[in-house]
Image (cartoon, rainbow, N blue to C red):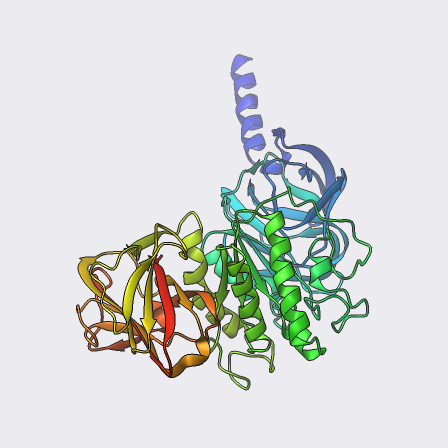
Length: 515
């Protein structure tokens, strides 16, 4: 009798082992509750794990409305979630017809168009283990994403994803939203450069929007100078104000002016509005580095740069102008889909050129001080050279040259290793001009490892300047090489020269190499 019972137990155990894992008693993790669902493929009832929107392992980036306990909503393109999970399948619950993108385990983005309800993101089940999921809001004019949770396998669980403490906020129009590209927000320069720096990011951008209120191609004519401060996009003109304490970006990037130009905003109006907009951003984010981009097409460039310089003159030294001239080849070229909107290839190129400007200000970046320009020791000039202790950008002084000579500032020094490469490094300094109209065309910035001019040297044109202090940043990737390839591990030479038609005052301060 005992032998018979023993054989029965063995047979019962083998039968049990043959069952699928979904038929085993579920393990209920703390992050969710179990729901019954019907698997039509084999007509068996299985248990699945419903993961609520308030699960602490789901991380939200962008502007989200958390006021409803059953659904979280975002109203700006490019808002996204990140979460890790175990198991072999994952579904998402979406409460509206929405366009969005999903990516699992770092693979390619999959587009979902006009999708709603419970959507299977893994029609082919995954291998067992820990997986990562990102879901980003996609391309339309309403930009509403109604997220109602996830569905996992029985016994599966969510885990906290890897997230950065750095956030970069991008403010712009259809260009920053990547609107003419198939996977808009996840394929534009803002997304690409942030991901390459391992930074989280937001895109407060909307097609057709201007900076200046009362203009633009949209029916409401509301400008970003108003809508940026709202929770919802331009599709919701009655939007409540955004709570700026929700997150704090380390960097804010502004790329506006294209639609202001096409809808006739006067340059003076645009410039004044830009100054005020930069000031308003500063009131919200006291410590953020703010970068103003020259629009890729070049429109309103002088007004953008002038606005930045006016903010710097007002004492805000954490505002920067990025000159994007020559970054992208004009249309028709592979860089543009049309005369205004970059292609995917154009966005990738712009992101690569932008990275050296932004990366030094994030946790993974660094800044190497080559010379503080606090004293004339070791410097030579074709003009009268002094240390100016009353007008400086940092330290105890700036280096000042007065005269009409071409050679302004030159120095050879003991070789230093700033720890950068051509692809991630840039030279950065402050440059003051008393009267830019007195400059002639011949000019150059030079830095190298040869200890003299035209030997293992990188060089750049200084570029357009305005009266007062200019913040100059030049990437090594954009430099001209003269006299052999410089050794970036042994920099020992720096020079600025600029031909002049009359005597003027120039100053330089805080010469750095950025990583």
